[in-house]
Image (cartoon, rainbow, N blue to C red):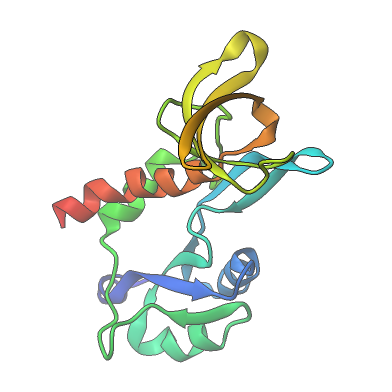
Length: 190
């Protein structure tokens, strides 16, 4: 690749169809002049049959691709699993290389990071089963010896403390907070 060609390459945020991040990434990787970065997380999600391991994109419905906007935009739009390249009117904002580098440094080399099921005080969780299924609560404190968590639940206008098994709580909110903590430093710097 010539020096002028490498200067025209930039990172862009690509919006995918719902739950098609891996399909879009595989399609885009077929082009030799397109680099793809799809950070993913793996965590246990409670189900009615018990905890199940889930792997999904850190940024749901988005991935990052490095390409020459002038020559590859139409091809990227037509790629399987791609909805759009993020733009604002006629502006196609590129993502600084430092942001992608920081993300890569924060994740495993194979782009998949394991989220710890540890619950931290103040963390927002959702109750995954039982009579309170679907209600959101705030973690008060973890009881590691019992693999249980004490949560504060706002129920019928008052706060109630409950103690639940860890596998009865959905901590997918951890993913949202991880996104913010990973991206926030660079957004402030930009």
